[in-house]
Image (cartoon, rainbow, N blue to C red; front, side):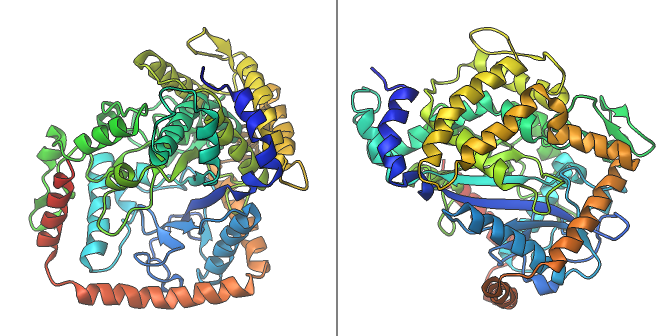
Amino acid sequence: MSATIQDRLQFLQPLAQKGLFTQIQRGLEKEGLRITPDAELAQSPHPKALGSTLTHPYITTDYSEALLEFITPVSTKLDDTLGFLSDLHRFSYQNMDQELIWPASMPCKLHGNDSIPIAQYGSSNSGTMKTVYRQGLSWRYGRIMQSIAGLHYNFSMPEQLWPALQHLQKDDPELKDLPLQDFVSEQYFALIRNFRRYSWLLLYLFGASPVVDKSFVEDREHPLEELDDDSLYLPYATSLRMSGLGYQNNVQASLKICFNTLSNYVKTLTHAINTPHERYEAMGVKVDGEYRQLNTNILQIENEYYSDIRPKRVARSGERPSQALMERGVEYIEVRCIDLNPFEGIGITKQQARFIDTFLLYCLLENSPNTPDDECRMVDENHSLIVNEGRKAGLMLQRPAGDISREAWSHELFDQLNQVAALLDAGLEQPEHQQALDHFRQCIDQPELTPSAQVLAAVKAQGSFSHFTLQQAQQQAEQLKAEPVDKARQALFSQLSESSLQQQKDMEAADHIDFDQFLADYMAKQKSGL
């Protein structure tokens, strides 16, 4: 008989008391638009004092030259991770003149597609490829969608956990004879399946984008209502960023990525990066001497696939992400559905992080059957309901056992999360995970306490989405500028800014083939991974 979550919790208690779960590893990737003092998107190049966006390990850009991305190193200490992210903001503010970091996921006022500058990475073949990839995103989806910002939460379990869990499940015929690497991958995919079943709860609790500037949907059909002269919203929305207005694409929706097994997941992705699409073929790859995209396939590269969670493995040089997964298994997972918290200078609070840890461990320890097509449809519909009208009282969600209200299902999940929080708190001096659960549980029956409701109330008080968010940016900038950067990190960031610029120059000087040949070689290698 398979082990239950109660079996796993009881079995892991002695290990938790010895500090096993203090070895959970995390890393954060936080995006934020650079804006001018009057809340316009910055048109200036990435500040040179922040180093090279191609080679700096901690400060780079995402889609746009104006879309900063801060990356923390992997750490087992949450305070260190949040402190590092705070210092990245402080250091950046030292080198940004009068520009500010927009603290919301949905962008500031935009002036059409071409007002969003595509990120530049220098003249090396690697740098050119990154820019051409983004040019492809512009042609395929438009730049406005790419101006959205979010926070990615990278998470991995302690290595010591896996042999213990495998021993506990030694009587499970499907798991007992798996090599450890395959067992770990299977367990991470079990986590992912449960995450997709229950992640509507994160969208409800942490969604913070119920309103947008009108320019975001200019000349597009949309279901939004007018809030004021400059802002649009949905009355009960939680995360318009994760709705059909945000990271959505009809071509990708047809992919039906399967999370039941690693091999199926990789097979589907590999098919997508090697299968031409009629619409993209019509666009062309190189037209009048200018690259429009890397290729005409459903996905130019694997990273183009939008998902609220991904299995990950650090790839070696020249290795595709899915090759790394197939050869060495899943190493960590990347949660991608977290909105920036506009009330926090770094976009996330410690309590949010403690809750996410609890939620992810629950998703791992709870039984996670494969997801059939019918349940996949339910998952997608629940997701859509929550992002568009999640704060509506009595909202009904679907699950295989029958429909249930958002409130009732939330309380059920919190009851189960309590036991996991106790396990995580066994290695800490204070019950931080339980305190986080107690804090966020209030939001279940009081939706006015959620970030989305608080953002909406603040926007109404300030007169527009732009006014509210600019005021937050100004206050956060003042606070971050007034706080000192850790001396060791200050020295590290300064040194990396200089060395990353030199590293980019070295890469540019080392290229011995032109970009046409470089791209042809890369695509041939990508196809050979079939």
